[in-house]
Image (tube, rainbow, N blue to C red; front, side, top):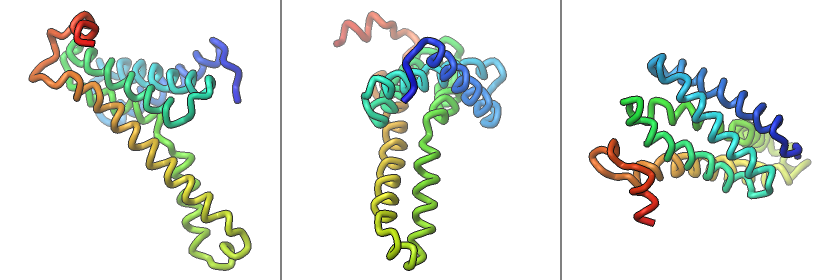
Length: 169
């Protein structure tokens, strides 16, 4: 586990910024929104990184990071006059559980060979664990992004301020 220092957080933010920015380019986001996607990606992934380092667990940390991206994305969308999905989706790609999906796929391929399963029956447990972790993380990403839209379910949230949100609590 890495030490939780400002340098590590900034490094994590920087890498996630680049990933969010580049995915926004690949998604064809308008040029003026590429930096927004990068900033949201850096912010969400940094929140996840900090919470993982504080032992909140990967699923809880991913949910928190995607909720931040979703909530901030709703407010930013109206400041830049663009739909939030244009930059929230590239931002959340920084938190996709690719390593666990890859491990699930490899274990699935190995399971097709019965001699490997007989030699190492633990591979079934490993495959199931990685599959459940992958599905859980993808589910939390989807829920996290949607929370902002569900909380502010109006025809427009242009005129909602943080005071309105705090006053309802």
